[in-house]
Image (cartoon, rainbow, N blue to C red; front, side, top):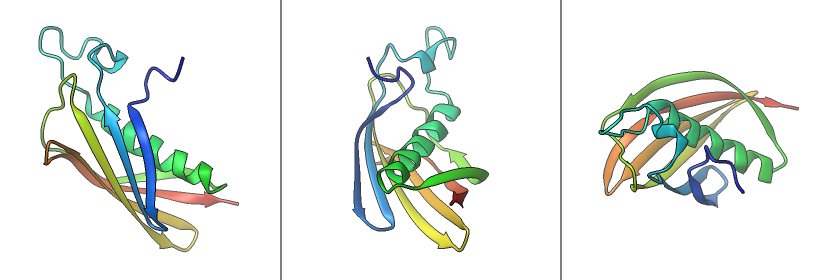
Length: 123
């Protein structure tokens, strides 16, 4: 059985600084536990976790490790409900020892979350 918290269904890197992932939000996901009974909405932290997990998996494929340290301008613009399919797009910007990841999470053509995550490259 896979990680019950993971929403990623497919991860693909389209070029050296662009990552895409597809995700699904199952109705029985533990992310919905208590959030909110009778009106389930995916918590914002689940979207941040999805982005971080996407970045981490791609870094591991490249033999790299990252230490996350800054989250900026993170926005949650629309609620995400059970059964939705999400597209994650991430562009990374090399900043020397750090990498800044600009992300967008989209559901049915609508941006549901966006922001930036900065991580230090571990050597």
